[in-house]
Image (cartoon, rainbow over all chains, first blue to last red; front, side, top):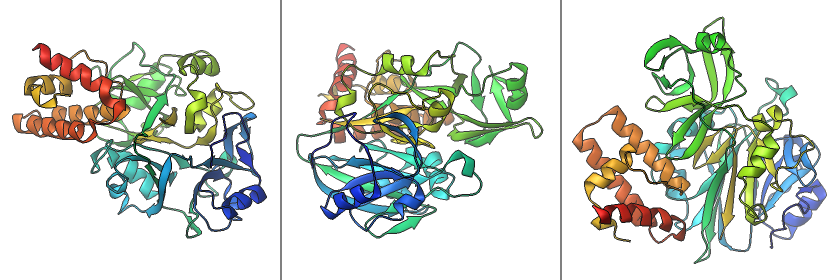
Length: 333
Length: 82
């Protein structure tokens, strides 16, 4: 099972994926729920999403399946389902030398639990984990529920996480990397009074203020995220909604009380910024990657290529922990 | 790498972000920020000791991983200069 090189075909029909599964291939899949429902049982996991960075560039596709094949460096595969109670074991369960691919549903209890508490899980960041938050077509928000699938059992799961724990052969290692085009701007320091996905009052340069009012006063472009500096790694918190009536701000990822955030500096063209950050020749070594629906939307990536990097467009990315507006990828070396 | 030779004051400064040392391994960056937040929330010597032990334990467990070697060399290099 050799991984196809980048810009080769990554979007497959149901029949083609069925044939792959019948040959015993182990697959990580992304597609619309209706399409995934038509697949036979097998060694696969999947999440629902109809947006992709494919061989054709950014595209919305409700017919085809984005396929990531498990590469030859993998010597063992274990598929495991987690729920809100068991997700805290996910790092502990991972192989000593391996890579875990995780998919959980947007807005599910499991997603929220993982987002808030993953850094406190046993063996956090000890073993490489990458993945994504499944979603739906934006026009179906509020009508449909994002799903994850355990292909081994045929389960279609509304609240949980499916994980493919991959054991690597000796001498091979998986590295998780991120590309975030956003950096902290030079503006005010923002600190939160509580951990969570929403807030009212915050400390702006140490002074208590309502964040919704502050954002309005400063006429902030909330397509730009808040950015925290994680020892050199820039981590975004994307704005979901600024409710001026209730004076409340909602986020796509949790903010943390002891962290200092700043509004991101404006960026020019996403594709140019992305290509500047992508290390030369690294794209062709990528085993798995995914990018954020907000980057897809705000940077109008439909029909555009991002340096040869392909993958599902997601409602959140996981590189050890939940991230927003970030491309995550993994290389096996 | 000589993790054992690095003094607790170096580990403490690393966790507090007082050492100018560009960490590149994403897992270590995420662990360090968690420990920094933990000490920010409760800056007690016992908490710092817990954080140092957790960091050292993490590094012992993954020190054979070639992807973290550069970071270990930087940290241990600072330790050996003191």
